[in-house]
Length: 210
Image 1 (tube, one colour):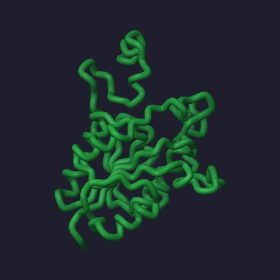
Image 2: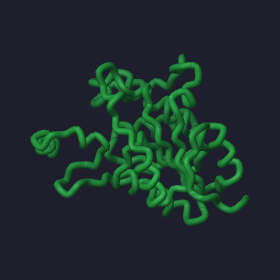
Image 3: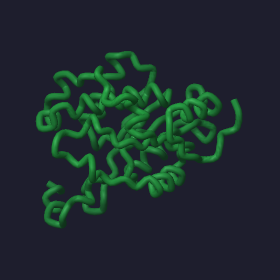
Image 4: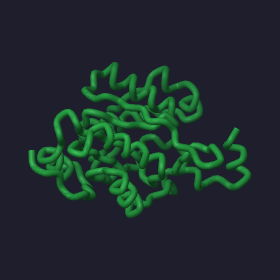
């Protein structure tokens, strides 16, 4: 094992594989998966990962806006993309690298014909109003777990159904990774931090607190 490299952006799977081959730490490699537009909630996940694996461990942050989990009429095209700011946030919170692939890198040849199905758990609550959302989410999480090869993966408890589904997928399909839930980070008024909060008007923010 060589010394950990300086913080860097890794844009493609081949580059990620090279970095992991040379710098991943057996038993102490962690991943934090995001769609970018990083905020303090994401930073808390990265810090939790760094604390768990220690200063000599290895922390990967992924930034990928996954088209498979956006339904018709949702905000795929306008979802905030702030990679330069994300890099600064990730580095300050303790990440070693940011893996930020394109859709073509993650889904070469177009959308995958074979996907992970969320099953009955994915048809309730949020899944009832967003058909297929959790299938797309689990498909990309599975792919990113294979690509990043972590021992631990950190997800926020804010997205409770998502976390429950990821835990179930890892259990049912025997992924060799520990899923770690991290407490929700909230704004001063109590609203859970979210990259989409910037969409809310003052009146909508007040409603969201309910």
